Structures are given as C-alpha cells and as structure tokens.
Length: 407
Image (cartoon, rainbow, N blue to C red; front, side, top):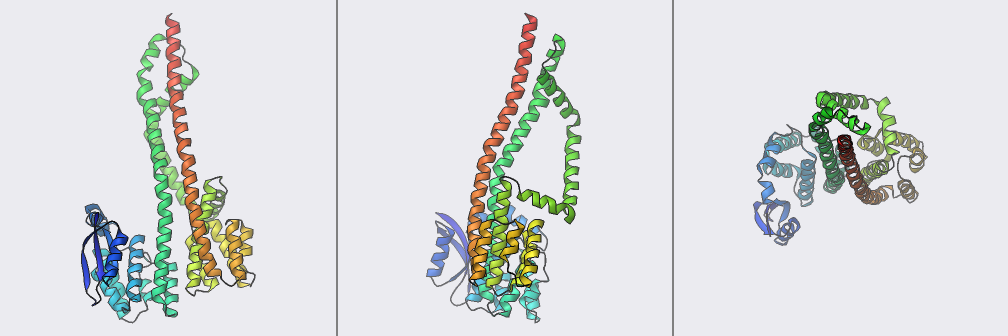
C-alpha cells in the first residue's frame, strides 16, 4: 500500500485535501467518487513533496507552463465545468489549488481576462508559449458550440496521448544511448590509457609493429593530443547543422530522407500518421471545419515533407477533390492511413474515423519503437565487442611478435 495525496470537491462545494493509503491512484479516485466527491487530483505523496520537483516547478520555466501542467489544467477544468461549475469559479479554484506560484500567476491572469469580458480562447491567447494554436482553435470551437466541457475533455485526452507517445519513444532510447556512451568511453580509455603503457616496451625492443597495432597507437596519440579540440569542433558542427536545418530549403530534403530510412523511417511515418490523425480527428469532432483543421494540423506535424503534403491536401479539399487522394500521392503517410481516411470521407465520418486510425498508428508506433530498440541493443553490443576485440587482438599480436624476436 502506498500513500497518495488527493484533491477533491465535496458535494457542498468545499475543497478537500488529504493523504490516503491505496494500491493505486485509480483506487483513490474510485473511493473519492464513492463518497460523492469530485476527484480533481491524485498523486504519490513522495513525488508530491520532492524537493527537486518543487524546485523545478518554481524556477524551471519562468511564466511558461509545461505540457503536463497544461494537460492537468485542461482535465481539471473539464471536470469542474462538467460538474456544473461556472467558468469564473472553476478558474478561481484552479488558481487557489495550483501547486506552484508560476501556475497560479498564469491562471489568475486568465481569470482576470475572463472577468473583464474576454472569451476563454482570447484569454488563453495571451499566453502563446503555454497554449498553442491547436489548443486555442479547439477552445474557440467549443465556446462557439456551447460544448466547452466536452471539448476540454477531448483536448486533455489529446495532450495525454501525445505526451504518452513521446515519453514512450524517449524512454526507449535511453538504454541504447547509455550503451553507446559507455562503449565509446571504454574504447577511448583503451586507446588513451591502456595502449600508451606498452609503447615504451615496443620502442625499446625496436621491432616493427603490426599495421593494426601501429594504427591504434597513432589513433590513441591523436585522441590524447586533439581529443578536446575534436569534441569542440563536433559541438560547433552540430550547432551549425541545427541552424542550417531551420532553413526550409535545407530541412525539406532532410525530412524526406528521414522518412526513407529502413527502420527509423517507418517509425517516423507511424508517429506522423498518429499525430496527424489524432489532431485532425479531435478538431473535426469538436466542430472545426476541414480546411481550418488542416491549417492547424499542418503546424503541429514538425516534418516539412508531411507539412507540404497536408498543404497540398488542403488545396485539393478546397477544390472539392477530397483529402485522401492527395495525401496518398505524397507518399508520406502509411497506406493504412490513406485507406481509412478515404473510408471516413465516403461515409461522412472523417473525424471519428481519424480518431480510430490514430489509435491504430499509436499502437504501431509503440511496436516499432520496441523493434528498433530490439535491433539497436544487440547491434551496439556486437559493435562494442568487435572494437574491443580488435584492440586486444592487435595488442596480443604485437606482444607475440616481440616474443618471437626475443627467441
């Protein structure tokens, strides 16, 4: 049993805070709901009181909210509006219960703008670094249709799905990255710390070293003398490449080439398809017209080749030619995406079909990440073993040649 801190609203409208022992967060929420309360937040007590977490919340990002904070605000605001609270009271509650001063300040500014007569979307637009165009478009559509609470609920789901997919990719890449780092460190240590210990012995013997051994000794010497400069040059080259990548003329062919890679390209296509269909479906289900939705979706993709494909599809849709055909001609998204979107167009169910398609691609992306890691880990291990074996064998051959010379 673990301890969880919770935040809830009682049937009388009072704010309830406390600590509860339960097997999981879901059990805490279930117990609160059985008592007639509206559960707003439940998190492990240890995580809620961690010094590092509190320090990051207070000083980490200035006045900008993190994606997780935006998702939490959206979910809690949807719950309160769905429970019958008015917008002003809901925003006041969120501000009073905010876990840090930064969130409290942003929420108070939003509430002040709403109380001055601004729509919620207009109030959120004053914080563009926290709430993007996609978020604002959905809130604006929800306000116009009188469906703000369901819209915020869908927005929270969209944010959580996006964060979950991104977290899956990042966490899966941690182990291969650490493996590469350790392997590189081991090889550099052997070249700069182990091999130089044998150089005086080779020089005293005056024997001609094998080509592989001489190559490794020279490589170790270069690494010792110019290693720091090489690292600095690589850092500058990476910075220059990043600046050049921001230019559309450079970024477009690179983004296209990434999609053609054997394994990583397939993973990127699945991720783009999941992002495209999840965002498009969420927008259309909330009443955003197709053309306006495509304009928002395009900016959320992050890949120039995919953005160009969506732009062409938007032009085709404006002319009444449909969405699926131009997307298929671009060759960016998987065939499954095109087929399902075409089916949605034919049945006038493009929004719901896009959401179903997103679920398929999100699962495919997770499986692709697992396959990529399953290939990377043994490949890195084999490469590391081969490099170490080459160094050791070169050293052994050199020692054997000295032994033959002595005899």
